[in-house]
Length: 163
Image 1 (cartoon, rainbow, N blue to C red):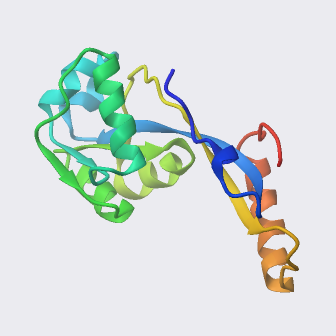
Image 2: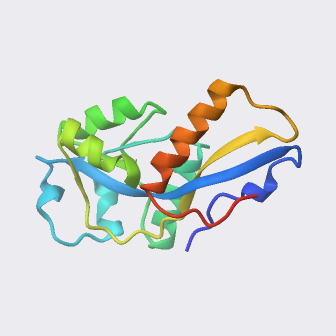
């Protein structure tokens, strides 16, 4: 399995609280021919156009590693963007494959008509964390936001721990 984010590499003057862990999935628009398949191998996905993160981004690195591990060539036809909204809209056309956080899939599927692909991924879990400066008082507004974020996170999954 591919390595996940290493929060231990942050400077010691940061405090990290992992709220939940997520993982990436692959999705297409409901009219994409892949949406009807029951099983897909990673190697066959390199022939389709993708919308991915720019070269050098964590998502791009993960995707390249996924294809390398499967012994497949990286897709040649890609649109690179950080914009999630653009990714979802392009996937909705039925022409593109996109990566999507599992936690956002329900909303995106409903709003943009996306289908999750039945692909076995060697995807690392990605932490959703609050990072603050140690020994700093947080404002009441920030504390209220954090309470809400923790409540929402409890509906997702259990974090592995706090630092």
